[in-house]
Length: 189
Image 1 (cartoon, one colour):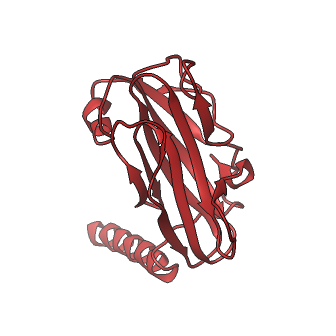
Image 2 (image 1 turned 120 degrees about the vertical axis):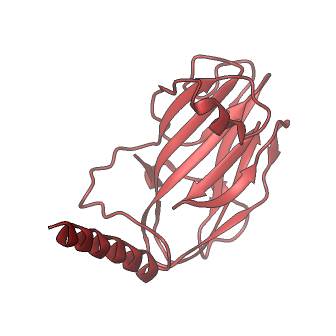
């Protein structure tokens, strides 16, 4: 019996590896399997950090408190609360969900932020601007999409003191000109 279970687990793992390989190393979800809701989920931890890597440090010490879902990432505020949190300063936001990438080809991503931000799509780091800084644009990251679909997205963001900005920008394949705000209709959780 133990051999049958071990064999079944091996088949499942091998099948998962094949799916990852077959899709160009990119996982995607079928919208028929999962009912998605608009916007991205967010939870908050409150601590004055100086670098995005400090998220891991504080996860064991701070409870991540859910906030209202974020329809888009387009926030630029003066001395007001950060995103949908309950604070103006010392906010760490864990933002999760899915992004729909509708056509194959290279997608360009960037952030305008104040302070640190990191973008992971399908487990791959695409953009990182990790430390304390005034409003600025990150470097542009590229993701090559082999198959259209919904991809898991993770954004870690923190605001230390003062004003806060978090704007998520992209340029899909074939688009020309400046990068534009990632629209809400391609974000879900």
